[in-house]
Length: 489
Image (cartoon, rainbow, N blue to C red; front, side):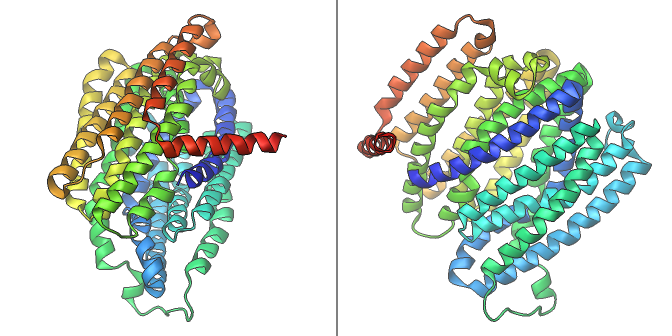
């Protein structure tokens, strides 16, 4: 498992490097104001994409793993029907959204009244925004993890190239139009490769609506997930709206920079969740076996997070300056809060996968809807007083709620619970990151003060982490280091 996680992480690291290059280009050319505007428009588009996609990208990774192993023809029919349905929905949404944006831009919010062409260009990118996660999840769903990661790397390249074109033109609208055009060149052959990988022999012909529309089981799943799919990005959009309204577009850019660091953490450490974890949990086996598998995954994930994330928290000011620019340095004090929320999200997501695999969709949707209400409520109460930090408080409260509800449900309804050692490790990682993030919030690296204290604290944190290592971890580490030494010799 560790080798697989490292392999996925390596490809995702390459993807992240490409995305960080895009971020740097946009930050330098657009500044905090342009980045803030781009972030708000992205959140608006995410609400629309999640709504019209009917959770079909998520359904691909939920249903294809089993079908691709047990009934290839039915797996092919399922993929084909989901792709056709998704195409009809997103192209209709793109056309409608672009027309409405040109004629009535204020429909999307008074902040957008002066940006009709920008909004129209953004809506034209909806087909690409919807099909990119669908194709990547479908590759993962048929257990082609490497293909999924390579597709993600190529898509990151498309995003980066579109960002470069938009930055050179000094226009966010050009960025969206470039992405829509370039993504089509990448997505069409990728979709062809995906279909060819799953295509049975002979190919089942289209047999009326049964092969055009997804099955009732998938449609029920999509209907159950619909409110959650829309409310989650809406909660994020609401937080961005509040910061934009109360603190201005520049502050929205600072918040986007802090969130960008947390997204970089998710990019590397969260890639294995949909690509590797979810398909494995949906393959089958007893629930005790799946819990043991999830616990092992959590153990390795926490160790990797504990090693990789703290340096980013300690050097948050340097990360902001390098990935964005010094005009974004006010975001430094918020980095740790958003990263903490992201780490909590990924920890809880490991056990949420068990609930989805068990088809406990009603509970999954209900608890996630409630968590988004918590996000909106806490953000609404705290942003007026704490500004950007209030948005992070909302995200943390939301994911803490999810964490407690998920573990409680698994215990009460399915008699499943992670081992005490794993629970202690999760808490240790969270508390350690919180403390190290607090030390780095003042900008230790560029100011040159307090760095030694933070490094000593990181060393103590790693020393404590060694208490959670198993014999297998130590043996694997010794094997890895010995191989590394031999290669250098």
